Length: 396
Image (tube, rainbow, N blue to C red):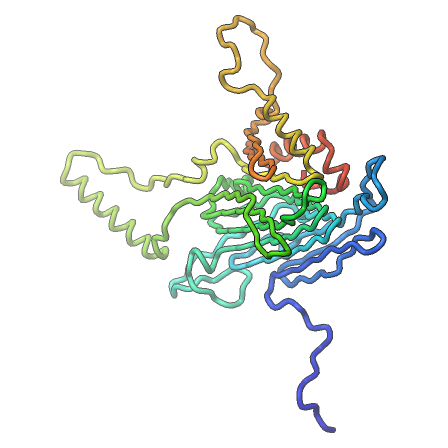
């Protein structure tokens, strides 16, 4: 039988070239039916959509064509519940005009696994990978995650994930970019609610900010489709770096410690002064800078859907007492009611920044404290549950 000159390409061939890459497009089909027109992903990433039965309640005077569409839930998952060293997750999401999406992590916190120690051959064996990778502390074992979201006019994104949990000796970097329509004005603007937070690690195993590196950067850009020009509206970065240097392999460290110990013994025999204390625990730079918090995070709010929520946070913050506002010379023994900023060992601040964004920064004693504090505020104000359903607050 005659063979074809060229093999026939499979119609089911994957459209994604790189592992860990995903692409999502949410469109609004007539009359008001939100549909995922594109949904692709590849191991170790998994994207699971869900269309809940919740429908936002329109305003009494709203026209039929201006009623909000039903939100679509997108679950971000990774096999194993976390990121192995060398994993690079890339997710691209596009929200067409008048669509709404909730992005959550149903697996719980995103675990950042540590790297195995370097071998004698100078090659790092990455757990979970069959191939060996070059022993480069800042490249080969860096877990990375990037999220690129384009939000159309009158579209809204509610991104409330669980926090990331970096394991001891792990390295991680993430970049989250959100692009809105620069020409949209008033109620036609895009709406955005983004939560980004990180914990001190596995407290049950005694970890307390013992990772090497964690970096999170959030950027919001405004793009004009007619001219193709974009401008930066907001950039927020959190960098937690232990600022340590690689001292070589374990064998080199052991020989270095042995030579230092011999030198100390020789020094003690020839002088009357006591030798320096050996084996001191090095300073944990990240722990010192985040003390006394076990969780730090950022909440970004923008757009007409979250205007009331942003105003609520600003009101709560500005109504709290400040240092110097109390008359300390007063003999009154009545103590003021504890403020929200201090209940449960939470320290937080809120500010209106460029382009009408509300930026909330917070630190809490532990994850449960931060979850109850932030979840309590969001539920008390009610915008998220009213516009996206109670499921959007499951991580809180």
